[in-house]
Length: 213
Image (cartoon, rainbow, N blue to C red):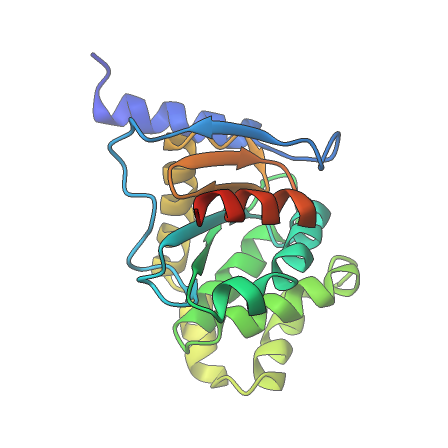
């Protein structure tokens, strides 16, 4: 039987091999996780919608991944019908890839924004300006300016952005993702099933409709 330390080391090795789904972002691949004794929903990570909604959706993402941005745009198109109506709650969990130069910085910034209850607003801004900040010379300056632009307290943001807690939270999400079998991003857990890749609008609607029956 593997020790806990060996198991965590194995999961971290898998994290380094995770890729952004660039080859076939519209191909649906689902996996049943009903037998796994792991809570799908986190009590600590930010949510969009009512936590008591009958359908729970968890998205593992990298803010620098273009396919994660694409999927986020798809999700925004179903928010009024599914989230605002109380049928669906969405949780975003960190999965920054080591190959993306600014991924860790941006997820630290998202952690800091979450401490001020502005994770969703900050995430929307990051994806909207992804082509801008990926070319940034000073990513820290950009992220701090974004926080100020969105009305966040600068000193509090800086403290959380550089905190040990931010790094621990990001690593925890990635380790949990590996426990669920995340091998590429975006990957999405909907109730007890895992879907890999950037689902199209029609695919996502079809899945949600099946869960709502």
